[in-house]
Image (cartoon, rainbow, N blue to C red; front, side, top):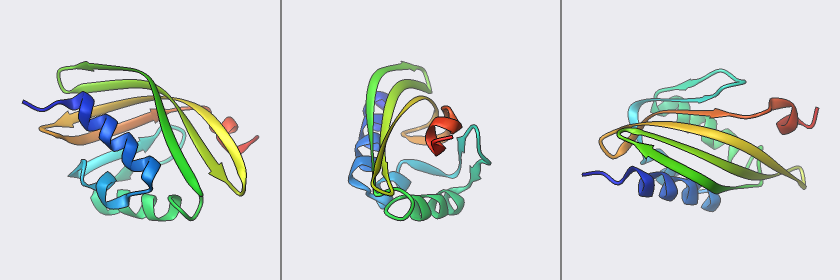
Length: 121
């Protein structure tokens, strides 16, 4: 049986390392990644495109600090703070994440956050 809690924690750690391949390895081929204030990335190629433009280009670094994480069957929900460094400025962003799992992979990932806080507006 899959350990969804551990999968998502490894996924979060891979973001902190900026390890695109490890992040992508946690998704199904047809996964959907949706930062709710923005358009979704549908499919592994679109997710790869987002990651490659975000990690190391738009954001110098990002870490996920998971405060609470709950697993119910194939659903994982976490409350966390994502700390990003962008243009030399540090942004601590409160985030609520929802993950739908299929086997030991992420089938859908939705993050809810304040876009104004992210953009500094």
